[in-house]
Length: 337
Image (cartoon, rainbow, N blue to C red; front, side, top):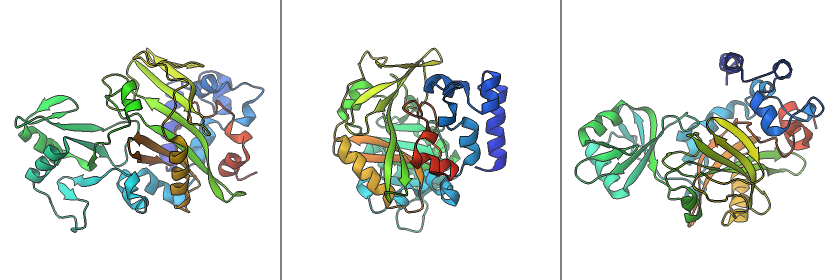
């Protein structure tokens, strides 16, 4: 993230009054961070401010751009192919293979056959965030297909596909039934924030939370009426307290109930400890990393890493303790133990 991008991000805080009070503005905390994390004038030095967090990036140096580019994911995790979605094509004004064929152009008919065989395909911009530019294609017989649940003819789909630039086409990951029972329309992912502990010489899972989309939403990280983000106990995988958003207002609560009526607090993530340990192993296999947020989808046969984030949203991450009060994170963000 260059200085220009940082400046625009900070200026947007000012314009939208996200900093709230003068005290927030002077100390660099957004109003959301103060409210969600319980930051006060007495404890604020334990917390990294939004301003300090954004201005200190990139925390992985030059490698941050590689982490954030979804195109690189299968290459980064080449030793863990069973934990990445299958990548079929890269779209750059035309359909290109990602297989070992020199990137030869693929006829649309082949794309159409792939969609028919797979049933569903996911299209994502290589550098998007927060679910922006996400498209779901679903086969709909000979008539055409569904694009984000809307019927489209094959001719319209072909024109749309060829208009996309810097997009990837991947398999649709079928999540574990526990997550579908809460909300089946979106892939409900777990964000695992890992940091390098110099003293231990290993990665640690610093924060972990589960996101659930709303009925009808195609992604889990864009609020549409009601949304839920729930902390996950890093030792047991049991869902804890979290935030709920209603009518554009997000609040913290000790007991989280999804819009479907399903109580999330107390729910157990299947095979969590095995997933956690494998994610830490994956992190350690990339020695240039220091701080990364993995988005993981639990499946019936294990899990898939959906993407990596070099600058995970702060949000409520400091609710369980300010980042600067932790020696591992303080070293990453300030260079001091």
